[in-house]
Length: 185
Image 1 (cartoon, rainbow, N blue to C red):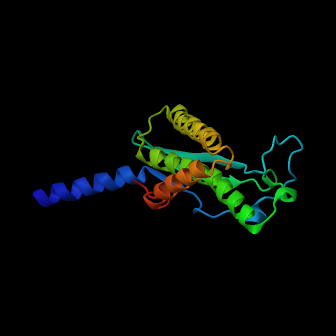
Image 2: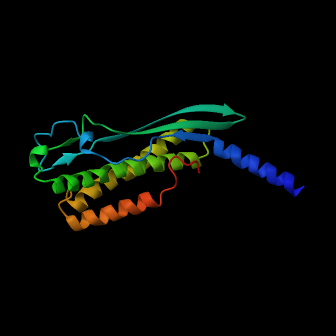
């Protein structure tokens, strides 16, 4: 009797996990080739700008009042909106520092993407799935928009080397202890 219960419990767990699937691309390191746009004329002293977008979509299917959402969460670096003012780069070391700072902006976008995925896979959706999915995305997006602002303010756009180092350590720890990519939890 206990074996039958265990099988039933495992089957229910598999159904719950299968109720939401996701697809997304893996983490990557930025290179100078990711910055293809011309610098803005009124960049207010900023040497580089990274423009990332997170788009999500889903397909829904309903069976026995169970709403299954299959998510696609895309993180894109927008090459034609990202730029580095190469005229202000005086050494390879400075370019490396700039790329490291801009990697932080990408890291924030990647962390956002992964949190959307983890939250979506843990959510049991109802007939109000459209609003529930938008609420998840909007709440997480607001959190990471603020993190991006905090990052630039704290590091003074990488000028504060001590704060930049603190953020680099933070990103490394977050990425090191992140669940496997696209893990359905």
